Structure formats: structure tokens, C-alpha cells
Image (cartoon, rainbow over all chains, first blue to last red; front, side):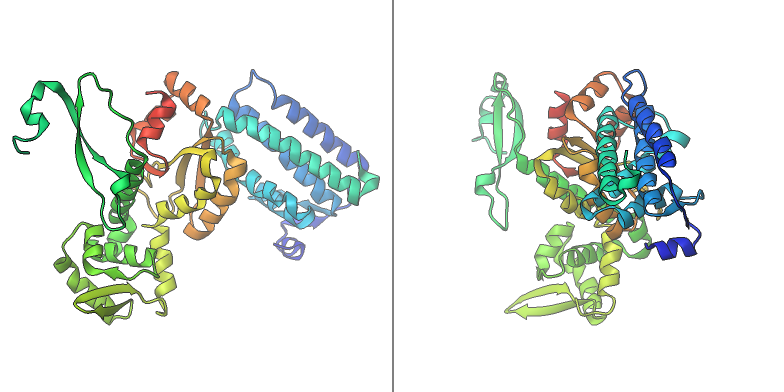
Length: 148
Length: 263
């Protein structure tokens, strides 16, 4: 996967982000991370909400790199996978992890209930927070004008 | 069983008889089995670990025989020969060793073996009166055939190998659903249940590698032992259905599962 291919396939487009846009995404992530911690919600809903926070964190990194993933079939997979083009190598394992979570979240949202286990819901919240932290660190280092 | 056995001498003293494998007397070629008599007051010992390994091996071999896609392509005996030789391509198989593994007689393998050797899929060598067979790794179809068997018959051994580095983080892991029941079709996902301290983050790199090798989606569900136990006690219908169905163990066995549940 390269940006050239993604642009040619119309899976991505060039995009100039702003601090305001990123701050909106930060607020969305903060909301989702808070909601995913609510004990009263089902494991499925907490899982899907934490996944959404991670996806937005991936989109933040992509936006800082100067791109936006087009909204078409499979765009979540493309967003997660293309973080490998943006972030440093130690962070690449997150892309594989959230890809596993993406499929589970699809099943949760469209097919079955009681899919995520408590173990998985707790884990994704921890992983989403860590991933978001990595993205903010990367922004601070590489795009200081856009940092929090 | 003759009259010299303790069971025959005093039937009332013994509640059960167990066939046990003594790991200390296990050699490369054979396993030594003996009967152990348990008195009514004696609690049955936990089954030795070697049982799980043997059970998993037996189940994997059974699955090799039952892969619906392979059954559609090859006759039973040829499937078994190819699964064994392509699964361990560097190994020279002695004829009766191969027959033992497939649970058949050496004579019933002769025709398949000579046909596979003459077509260049297997190679053959003789040492005295003994005949040995091995996959012909130089054959132009070797890699394709190996991949075909890996994606069908070799599914469980491949996953087992990829999960191995996670060691004690996994207490028990098994395939369930259509693949475990040998009712899968070409596009079926592989459903894996993992119980232990390994979460999806630990499992994901192994799952991605497995998908690349098997050409199928592998979906895992992970439980901590506590959650697994609690859900079963609260009669979780998904878990109950999974446990009632057929399983192919990748790590541990039924005894480990029983131990987690607290049976």
C-alpha cells in the first residue's frame, strides 16, 4: 500500500488539515474514550465505542500527513492500514490489532449481539488510549503547530 | 485379561480402571501403556499432559481425513499420504510408520505410493529391505500442493505452531464452528477461542500470519479464565453451544478446559 496507489484508486485524497479540525477530532476521541469506560454499557457497545476512538486517532495521523481517506466500502480497513505509511514502525502492531477489532465491530454493529467479551472490551479501551497517546506524541514531534 | 490381574482377584475393591500412558517409558518409536486400578477410596489422578498432546494429534489426523474440500479432490488414502509427507517435507517416512500414522496397513498404501513416486510427487529410497518415502521438494507442483494441504488439512497444525510463541499466556485454545465440525466451505472463516492472559493485541500478529498462510479469515474470541468461568456459570448460551459442539484443540485439551471451568 502506498499513497500513490491509494490516490490513484480514489481511496484517499489530498487534504490540508487545521488545528481546529484536529481539536474537533480530539473532542470526539475524548467523548468515545469516556463512553467506552461506562460500566453500565454492554461489552459490545463499549468495544465499538473504543474502536471508534482508535479509528479517529488513525484519521488524525492521516490528516496530519496531508491525506483523507474517502468514505467508501472498506474505508475503515484502509484508514487503519495506512497508519503504517504515516507512523513509526513500533506503532505498526496497532494497525493489525485494530484490524482484528474492526471485523468484530462490524459483527457487533450489523450482525450479532453479545460478540465482544468483557476481556476484549477492557483491552480495546487500554489499547485505544495507548494508540491515541502515540498519535499525539507523533504529532508533537512531527507537526508541532498542530499539537494539542 | 487373565485371572492374575488384581481386577479379577477382587472386583469389589476397584471402582474404575484407567489406561494410562507412562511418559517416563515413552521412546521415540512407541508409547508404553499400562492399566492402573483405582480403589473406591482413591481419587482418579488428573490425566497426564501427554494425553492432551495425543488427543490433539489424533484429532488433527481425524480432521485431515475429514476436510470436505480434500475429500472432493482426492481419495482417502492419497489424502492421508499427501498430508503426512507434505506436512513434514524433510522427513523420510518408513512405510509401516506411514501406515501406522494413517491407521491402515502397509499393503493398502503400496498402490498410492508407487503412483505418487512415478508421477514425481514423492521420492523413494531403499535401505536394505526397508523402503522410505518423502515429498519431492524439487517438483514444480510441490509448493502448490503443500499450500493446498496447509490451507485444508494442515489448518490446525499451522495455527498451533503460530500460537506457540505466546506460551503460558494461553491456557487453552481451540477451533470451533464449521471448521472444527469439518462442515466448512471454501470461504469459511476459522473461529478460534482463546482462554488465558493473551488478549487480541497479543494474538493479532499471529492471526495475520495465519491468514496469509491459510488464505482465510481467522477470527479469535478471547476470555480471561475468570470471565470464561463466570459466563459458563451464568449459562451463557453462546459458550454453552460452543462447548457442546466439536472442538479442535490448539493448546491444552479437554482436561485444561475442565480445570478452568472448575469441574
